[in-house]
Image (cartoon, rainbow, N blue to C red):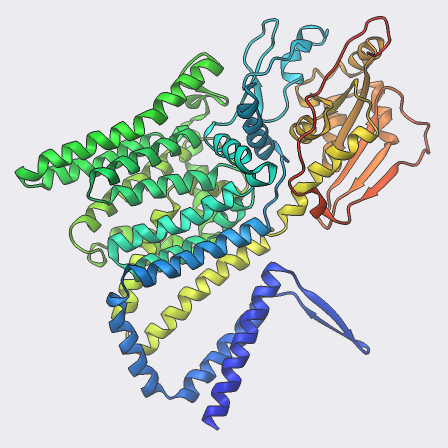
Length: 625
């Protein structure tokens, strides 16, 4: 009977866990059996079944036998060694890479993703600072900004009216290298690959500080972090920045000149990805100073050498950013966002601290809280380098917190992504405390703790699922769809009033976007009339939530009547996105039905290639060329 119970319980556990994975990554099901409808959408239900089945399995197997196995396994942990831990970490990292590639958005969509992807193309084609001379030919005010899509900023008011990328060059350079090697599709492997590197580096840090079990636990917590999963499916810089800084910290813990050099080079890459965190390189330098102070006289020269090598490795990143910013914006201390200090204010500190703390606790409560506690519990860290590294890690976490506490205040939990460069250090601290506790706990409590570690990770994946991390791929691809169909309704020599769609339209459609949010509110009618006299038609591409904004931005303008009769009405795939195309020059008669396009398969828009550069010709004689 006991054997039968074990077989049934184990089979149930495996089936329940498999079904949970299916619900997380494929979605729920609804089956009709006769007059009854069977639904399964909640991934926590089968987890509960699995837990109950495992309890039955434990009871049926006999507590004494399991205690003996537990003790043997626990005593074997120090003997696992790097190979076994490394294989586990590689497996976790491979799962992260596979899942994030499968659910990658692969789109130059909103401001961030279109800015990074389009900048990569500009690095490849040598047009990093494109001119927009049309801004000098139009009569309306603020013309340079109106011709600048999201992700770019105007940098001069001369005849060329040049634009420069808003975002830092590190990620676009990685995307450009991938595209040069493998084409458009390869660009969207970069961030998932960085996610895998982030997990492996987290494992390496944990292993070097407290052993392979700590490394595997930290890697598991990192891999299942909701904010990491959310950002790893989009072509944005947060996960690459985290991977670069985590790799730098891992090599920092080495004891050779090559480790110091590699740590510096990783820091240089991280600085090009996120320049405002350059000070983390200086904090890492403290590591060498601490070791220098505690070293014996014969070893001090080697510590000085390692510090110099680390600085030499990191310096090219700082120099490259300074030279590039001076070329693009006229000052090595000014980025596409302006001078960083312009966004800092003391009144931001309290709102930001409360928001980031609440977001961290809501998204990943146990690792976030336990990680902070781990920094202040000294006895769980082995003596020597581990405790020195803990001090440097705590300084890095404090530095990033202070940096973003004074920065702009945001209202969405995804801005927790700012902390991904130090998130691995928090996960390692949590793993150190958790593993130290598990090793000292009695059998049943320790077994529950191991199950808890697995549950923490599962909960993180569920949170990411609930917050649409696995749904963004089709939500973001509506930008590609809309931009691809716009040329069917908008002639080449036209302008498109837009905001949210401006980056995607510039990248994919070959049409000239005009930012309505940068327009003077009294110039809509006059600009459309002037453009018509110049042989240029005017259209608008607006998401449904932008309609009220557009109306409010142009009060009392006659051209708003065009919003009553769209020429195209697009509906996204299961994401609620609705986008309208309007003819502002010649609106169709009232009551004219639009062309309705409903997305049925966003997979066809994966890795869609960019369109031609927009061209626009003003012909004051009234004939478009």
